[in-house]
Each structure stands twice: as C-alpha cells, then as structure tokens.
Length: 94
Image 1 (tube, rainbow, N blue to C red):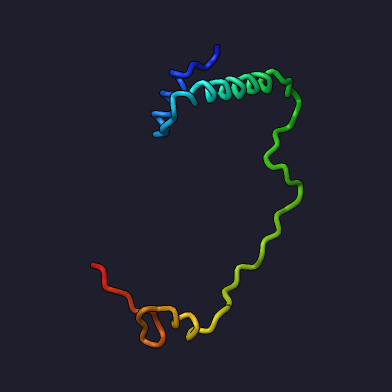
Image 2 (image 1 turned 60 degrees about the vertical axis):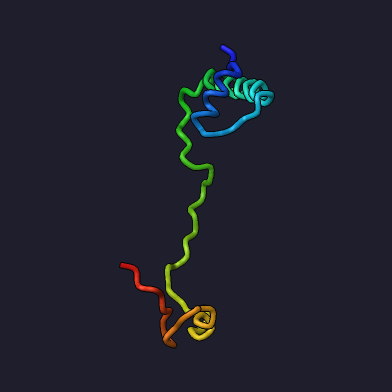
C-alpha cells in the first residue's frame, strides 16, 4: 500500500514540520522505499540466530573516575563577573 502525499502531510503536521506542497510527493516516495526495505528485512529467516546486543565484541575501557585540578583557582575566577577571592558570587534566587 503506497504512502500518499496526504498521509505525509498528516505526519508532518503531527511532527510540527512545515513542508512545501511540492516536497510531499518526494517524501511519500522515500517513505515507500523505507517501508519496502523493512518488508525485505522482515522476510529474512533469522531462526537460530542469536540476538546481537552490541556490534562491539570487546569490553569498553573505562577510565578511573578521579577528581583532579586542571586550572588554578585564580585563573578560573578571573573570568567571573563577581568573586570573593575563593568562590563565584551570584545573585540570590528565592
């Protein structure tokens, strides 16, 4: 069942997209192609195939989560509009 431009317009409206009238036919053709490919994938026999949870076969290396100083405090506070010499001073919000 081919996708009609009216259906594309409805989907675009739901997604809050503004599409030109002349673009609707092109998107309808693209959606038809996507759905046809999905039907092709659905027809593939996957019996006996283990599910693939990740294409990466090795463990992901993690770094140690350790805090470290990368800049001196005075260099960071130099960018602040207001400071007391040790901390940023910000307006009070109640």
